[in-house]
Length: 264
Ligand SMILES: [Zn+2]
Image 1 (tube, helix red, strand yellow):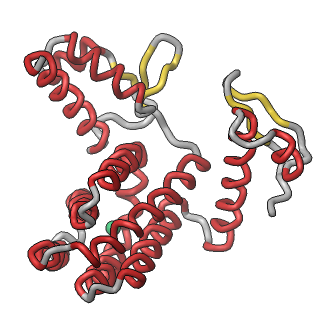
Image 2: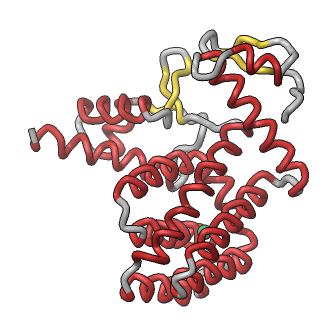
């Protein structure tokens, strides 16, 4: 069992890392034989890794080819909403659960990250390490798992988040506010500081003004309700109350409201 699993995990990890670091970007085609050559792994574990990545929606089909998925504006906004909630919770828990060593690690990271200003890729990696450290300091394994999933999808935004690191001094100041609150054991403040940080990052990534972003986010939650209605979680009639416009078929699987909806 372990013989079969470890090469599979390696191939999976290698491809994931390649997407994460931008070697493969959204829309790029992934070919089994090329990946096998590039990573020096046989084709069977590559095939299994590709299947797993497809199941996780990191890869998608384009005809018979597998390509790196891209997130549209709505998916991006939805992802940031979930990320803000979960990261805020992690910061809240960390402010209660973090050991003094864990707090010190966070403080050391803040110090070290200042030296990286001007190197967007290094800062982006440091940013991931910083957030991961907060997740671990929450001492909640289920939350850590959920955040791993969210961050895996964030890899599909790799190019935009690096671009978003343009204002790295602001980012580091926000990180410092989060660490201060965690060190002080102030859960409310830590939660709020982290949410603010994520919402600022999502604005930087999207290039939208706060007002437009708020409007778009409320549209997104309306759309979410409509889609859930159609697949059966919410009565369709309720969705139609909020969305008098017609439901539009997309992908043959999901239906979405295409026209502007009257959101509550
Ligand atoms: Zn950050």
